[in-house]
Length: 174
Image (cartoon, rainbow, N blue to C red; front, side, top):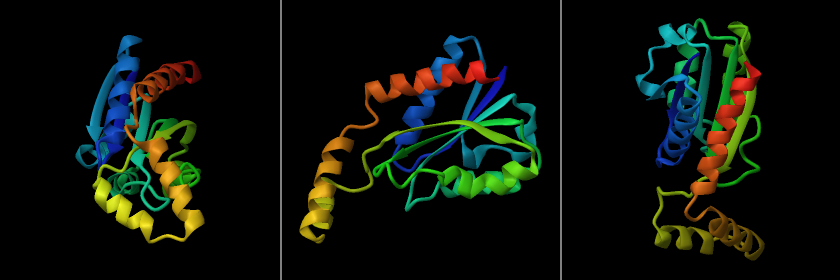
């Protein structure tokens, strides 16, 4: 199969997950192209058997380059998979469906599966994060501090192995 992994990554977290997925698919003998979404030609999307779209989640939405790519798409393969990295796992459900659902419908495509994992906010220093957290009310401050501990160093090796297994499992859905 011919597979495209197109991603939007501000902090390299999503790119790290994309690389793990590419590695897993190549281990299965698949032809995989991996590229930042901003560099993908939308007119060639229908030449792939499967497209994996990845993005960090930014204020409950996906990255602009993925949205832009999908708005320009006129033809897609029937099956799409999505993956995301996030700092708050409650903010990502349906982010892709909401952002690209109309394009998928127009192109008779559907999301066959989604993968998500924690991603540490590499865009803020520890000092900036501490300052931000200190401005919240006590309950929210505690939740943010706990979340910060969970996300530190993520995606980690286990997350990447899970991403690789997810990608390999997609082949069974084709």
